[in-house]
Image (cartoon, rainbow, N blue to C red; front, side, top):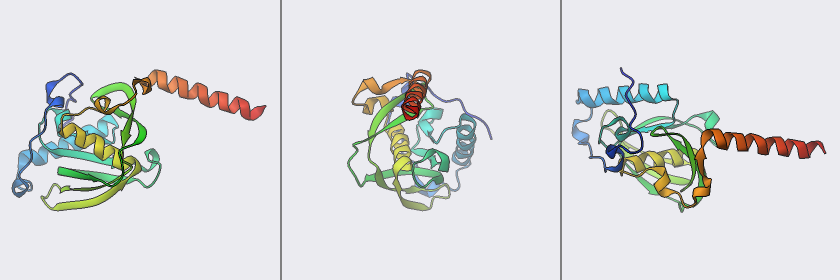
Length: 186
């Protein structure tokens, strides 16, 4: 396995729709299977919760997505490998939440997403996969599928007052927590 280089905002691969993968050939395609293994290793190395093939310079409809217990407000979700994923939103995409992206390092923005959805696709053996996702996992799936459609999260933002560098946003959050703690002591 190999850690792959991650494409950053500005590279054209991130703005192009990805090509569908023939489900009949998934299980027997050693190049695709190697890509999946390499993406798993790359995601673990980067410490992210999702990765789409275009982010590693591959214009294929393939994503990895998960919701670790400690990073989601509800139930976590293990790593999902989804080929040709399709999402069916079951609520309006009006819930704001902070997102970052491995292709846009050191920045975060508040993005409206649906809090719930159903997903369909294929696993790495070419078997159909269906499921439901809520909360953080639903957000991760929408973010990764956007990559397959050439959409980066800033393109979904409605208010750029909620867009900034991690370092600045973390400092502001710490100051706000400290101020709240100060009020508790009075």
